[in-house]
Length: 463
Image (spheres, rainbow, N blue to C red):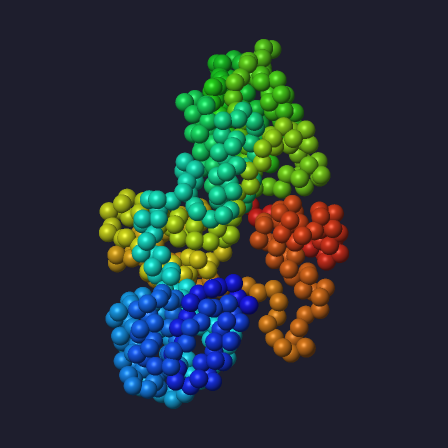
């Protein structure tokens, strides 16, 4: 049974078919009411709300097409699907011209019909949502600059609200582009340190030989180009927050010095004999699998525990549902204003494509997509042609072979290997996340990776 509980009004003069459709559609999770004539159906629609109308074209009294016209005129937006045993091109064109959403030929199978009804209902709901998006953006639930109403983001907001005023170190993890720096800034802006500095540093962007001086400062003459004393980023963050982005890329030889700074709340500038006291809150972030890095001795376990007092895991955009459209509208408003273009919304086909795409680059990729679309747009709305070819032509990949032929079905060992590869690619080779998705413990995952000969490396990405 499907999860939907949408209300469908079935109109047909054949009592046996009405009963059959009622049973089959109820079996797929719909609430079904049936009527034998157009007049009774119009009365039912006037007295109760429905999510779709399924009607025969050959009705007693009022013709089916005339009934459809009245429904569409009286209740614009209500999806109408017509069915008939007398399919003809002329009937099809006539039905579509008056605004019917779909057209099916009898006999109709319950599962196929349920899918068609869900599609037209979802399509109309999406069209309505696109129209409401601008108001939704203004009224959306947020945590400072973070935006979204999905269950996944509500959980993040709850955790951030609880830790914002704490002095505990925070480790933010998540795929590239999920908004780790935005999250760190939001924590800082909600804390008692909000009037102090927020100092971000991308540890993967600073050459190893310069990183120690960048973080801790240096004394005059510490090295050839050290013509004067220089305060490090920890000192500049005094009274505020330092954000250590891409901490998983920190050179192993510098990790003990960072650990000491965090434990002692002091830093020793390069070339100096004196330590300098610091008063900072530390927020770190990575898209690396630090558990694996610790096991492989590429990251110190004691430093991992020190930075991971509170762990915030950001959900990828693909699991955030309609947040995609809300964020898309937010970016659309921003770039349209910047470009001085009168673009107000996404077309329904464009919105559908945004929802179906998997967004491997997450929020950053969505922002870039919308910026490009606004630059290309020639209408008051973003249409399909404004989206990149990659997004327009995207189709979901399937792990299993969709066939009833036993010769085409894959052995379980092969299916398991394909699925593990698919999951590992989706989480960018993060073994901790892959084990969680697959329902394995980490040892089981390692054993299966070895057995199947799977060796997927993380993609190189910006934070």
